[in-house]
Image 1 (cartoon, rainbow, N blue to C red):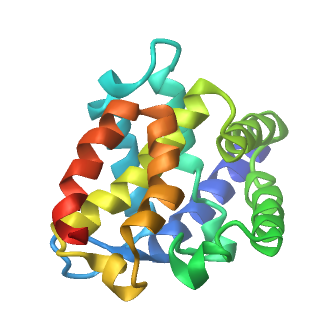
Image 2 (tube, rainbow, N blue to C red):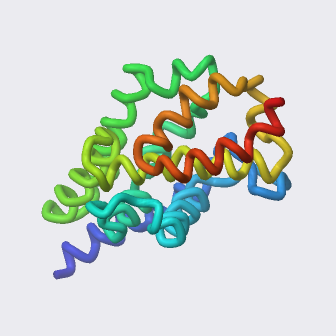
Length: 194
């Protein structure tokens, strides 16, 4: 039991470092950049509040678990903004390999049974093929949009984002898991991109 608890607390202490990873996205009030720990918590809340936007096959409890761990790899890799460098860095082979190494290291701190469970959940989120992961990815894409809307443009201004870029890099993924949600959010962005 002592060894198991030591491993669990080693993971939890490491996870605390996520609070020090600053994201490009600001808080809704624009006062400062949010950290990845805040982002993960906010997404879990998004899943609870917007559960009615999920398909009937989506299990919100699994979505919440995914969202709580989805960005732990940023402890090692940092935040890679989706709109930076024309979006290329976000999906690059190099970034994905670095995230895989980070997942190996961070989830490997846990006892083997939990390490396997957490890693499988993270891999499922990354693959975005199951209904739960598709919905989780939708929420992960929509939350920064809402922060940008609330803060007067936020990172859209920083990265010179166009309506077309928003649609291809964000909208398509949100619509895949929550089409009615994207219709509503897209309508909110029109005045900014007009």
